[in-house]
Length: 351
Image 1: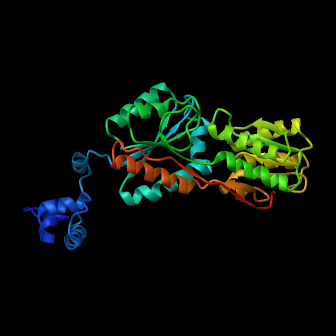
Image 2: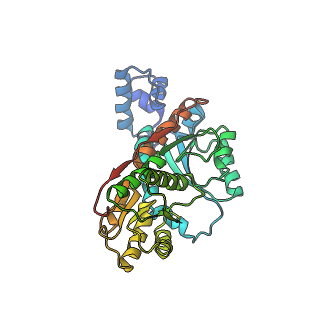
């Protein structure tokens, strides 16, 4: 803060910084706006003057120059409108996946001075409102968590030519949108290989939702790998990637296959719900049933015993989403490649 002629404190201006630094106002402006062509000695003098005067850049004025909002939206797209009290709203803050995505995004966005906002899209009206909001320049791009094959939002973002990265591969056929994913098929195959190596033959699985590419890919990858081991009969019950859904699916699976000795649960959170059901049925882990999960989230360590699982490096994947999005924003019209991460098995005590 500096003082005006009346002695009252006022916010520091570019002129104040320029006077303290002994440079022109234009040089201060270039430093504040991130220009890379400023002499390092002048940049250092300006940065010291900014610290000394307490100058805070006017983001609104900067946006007029750069035509950017310096923010991106993390959009969670659901199939249908849900009431405010619907468990999904709470699940966003309790499911380890969402927290890990935010952590990975912020690792890249914070050093770039880009803010992250959370937005929900759960019906046609909210999707139209979202696209309109983005086209008006209130955010520079989108990281989209869209889990269902029929979701029109990826196509809407592509058609509007908005920078966007999808946090999973799009459904087939899908729009030409950049995405970051893990090799879901191969990852589930690692779970099958583990169970087969343990000599388990009466195998079942709690799959993810089959209207999601990840749910289908994990189920197909698991079945394909078991078939390569000569195991063609696999009992499968569809789950919903929640703890309660895992418990419900496990009860149905045990009713269908009470003698199972190997189990793949397509998410750690579902496994956290499934294991107590196995215990109540008198099953011991891993003696009676060997169990493998998927994600390597905090839920895997909350299981008793700790869960053998397929690691999905969510934080690293989210950081890559942020990098791809910033590249699109920085170079409009640029096509950025999609990135597929490799899965790996993390062996613990459940299998």
